[in-house]
Each structure stands twice: as C-alpha cells, then as structure tokens.
Image (cartoon, rainbow, N blue to C red):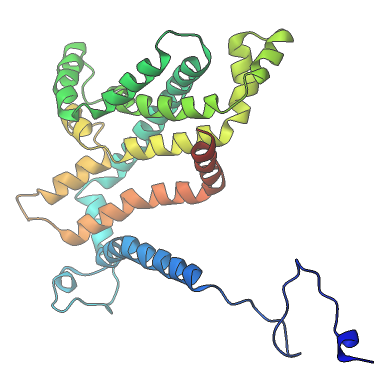
Length: 301
C-alpha cells in the first residue's frame, strides 16, 4: 500500500493541523493582526493612564502627591474623599447631578425621539434641511445662551432650581437625540407602521407599540449619551445655580479655585473619581445594549 493511501482525507475548507500528538495546535496570528492588537492595547493604556493616575492621587496623602520622582508605592488613605465630601459638600451636589442628568436625559429622549420620528416619516417639505438646522444649533457657543437663560430664569423666579437646569440642558441635548434617532428610524421599513395602521392603530399608536420596542437599543444608547452630556456640563450650571441645585462640575471648579487654602489636588482627584465612577458603572451595566445600539446606528443610520 502506498503512502498516499494512508494519508487522512482533508476537505479544502478544513485547515491542516500542524504539530505532534501532545495537544491541539493553536493557529498563529498574522503579523498584521498582531500589530493591530498591540496598537489597540497601547491606545487603551494611553487613554486609561490619566484615569489610573487620578485614582492613585485620590488615595495619596498631600505630601506624597508632589514627590519627585512620583511615588508609586504608598500607604493609601481616604482622607481626600472625606475632605471632598465634608468641605466640598460633595454629597448633595452628587444627588443634584443625578437628578438633573436623569431629568434632562428623559425629557430629551422623549422629545428628541418623537421629533426624529416626525422628520423621518412625515411628509414635511424640507425635512432634511430642518434636521440639519436643528443639529447646527449645537454649534452655538453655550455662553451665548447662558446669559439670556439666566435673565429669563431670574424674571420667572426659578433660578437655582433643578427644573431650570433640566430645561437648559435639553436645549443642547435634544438636537443630538433628534439627529441620532432620525437615523435609526430611517433604517426601519415603513411597512411596519403601515401594517399596524391597517389593523386599526393610529400613527402614535404604531410609534409606541411597534417602532419604540424595535428601536430599544438605539433609545438606550442615545439615553446614555444624553446623560453623559448633561452629567459633565459646567457653564449652564455655573451661571444658573448658586447653592441648592449646584452640580459636581461646579463643585470641582470651586475646589480648584479655593483662595483660602489653595487647590487641594488630592481632593480634586477624589471628586473627579466620584464624578467618573457612576458614568462608568452605568456604561458597564448597559454595555450590551450600548454596543448593539452603536452598531445599528453605524450600519443602518
């Protein structure tokens, strides 16, 4: 019998295994794939290094922050967090930030999603131009709107309130939500609503019963980004609030400009971690819907 007859049959689609009988052979990655992987790792490290440094600084004593060379190994302490919450009054400001960010996100999502649906489905002359103009309004400098908003709020007697900040934040979050959701709705076939309306649903009934459930990933991802936009906003909160509705960005700015004791960099790092951690936790909890929503928007919008 020839050696060719004893050779096991392999299909063209099946990769030829190389190695001995000691275990399975792992395919070697191509050089280009390894390069992309290492480039991604390096980019992640560069982006995460400032966050890691802020985390380490928040647990350092004041004397360890300015050592040269920088101190890597030190005895961690929570004094900076206690200082931030006691002297910086960070607890109430964190609650204010949560209330305002959630309120602005919910209102913007409802209004922006309905506006995006109207621009994508209704026969409105110049709907595309209207959408572009609304999006271009995001380019208006915030300072050009902050002062008029303050004058209106003072006239109405609603300065330093949560509702004032929520409405102010909606002015720049709604265009963002409207434009994103318009892309999601344009990707959906019109036959879905038409079938529902043939069965007796109104336009709004078809929207809430058919379109909203299908667009859940897009709604969730847009809602998360809306919260992040409202969470980190400083100018409107600085102009429109004084004490009762002050948010974390304003608290951090006040701590950095403390003229009595100077900037406490350890407390600033602790306050920065308090501001960052809730957003990171939120993104991790809903990452499945967030990634799916971004992918749908990138491929369909």
